[in-house]
Length: 140
Image (cartoon, rainbow, N blue to C red; front, side, top):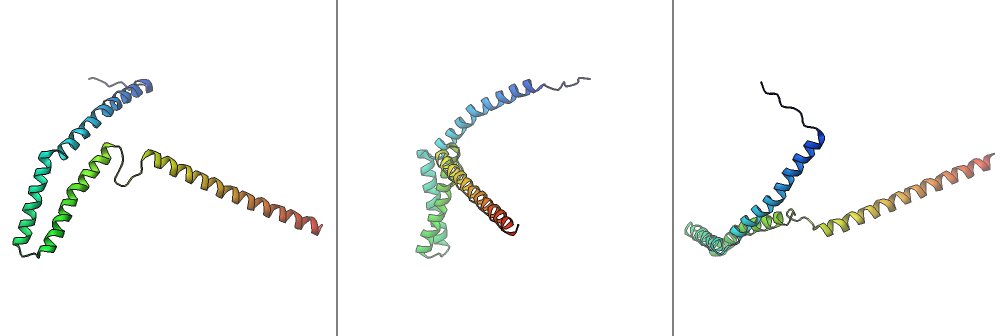
């Protein structure tokens, strides 16, 4: 019977470090490879052929020309949205997500607003305490 010994925290940390090191080098390379295949000349030709076939099919089914064009445009937007999504993944952002600089500015703004709100609350609280103390002094 082989028993697995439990790793100490230092060994666990080293193992995590190794895994993250491998991921940090391999994942970006994989994303770049996927992006290159999506935005290649061949991929463009394939998307064009797919759009033409889609348009032809819906026209042959009796769809009016302007509707067929709109539907084909929407169909192509699917491909371009996918491409944008992959690009954002490649840059470490989600669809519609702000850049690191934008996030930093947003965090700073929210912190300032929070601090200002708390200062206002404390100021109000102190004001009410003083007013209460003054009323007590007047009744004495």
